[in-house]
Length: 371
View (tube, rainbow, N blue to C red):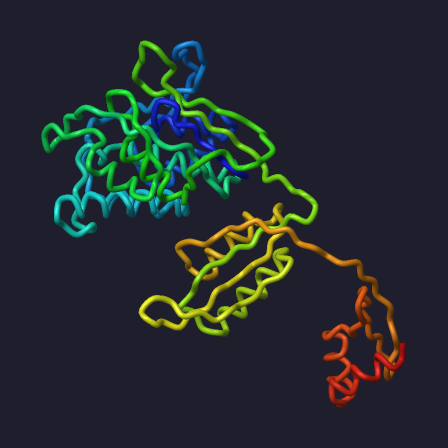
């Protein structure tokens, strides 16, 4: 599924979670994921509220203590228990951003405002909701930056907060009204989900959700809008997934190709490349039907460990073809006929060569003579 976000007035973790729940994610699935972290003393609910002229879903988190500080490493460890890579990646990104700002290693970062229950619940909750909805691609309109100041443990800081700006590197942004429009939690979630920015991708719209923020604005609803849709399949349309790889052996690359083809790829292949600093590498290409592209993208990430890939839409031109079968040495050999020639199927020839001990190229000639 494709998720498209319209951060109408901004984006925070609780607003995103509310929008995903309103679009159909299971609140029970979210609660179960948070429980797997080992966090105690919390209650998570959601309620319909009125914000301006709209009805939206607002997440409510009640806790039995008001502690807001924890080591970032503790939160990352708790998120890792859930088996939700987006949650672990978002908290890791926060730790790296805070560490860079304060000149300490990420493992030694101590989170103040971001160290409480809310951060962990929002991040794990959103990651669980994305999985429950089957989201494999996230797109977003440009994010409003906001303006003004925000009071933190480190004193008064400009808006956007420095950590937010660090997490928004690579994102598309725009101006916005006064106040904090994007929080570090919201920015970290979009970063961890590999969000693409721009106009909505073509999709078949299936559900919408509105997540309410806590502020009341005088002239507009305070919402994040989530739109959920399926990729549109058109005749001849295919998706090419490509990623550069310089740290995998030939055996692993062959395994990835086999897995991709078994999972529904129309084709998969490797081309050699030379990357920066003269490093030899390979480019993996997977030709995917649109309905299988998201699943194949996940497979490529899981099997290669790549941190990114390119998706491009192509039109596949397939000429008509038909098959007939010839008998050679007691075995069937399929012959593929196209407009410009005929060719025996390699797998059939290879099996026949194994069975008879005859050279494959001679069997190919005999199969053509048998037509």
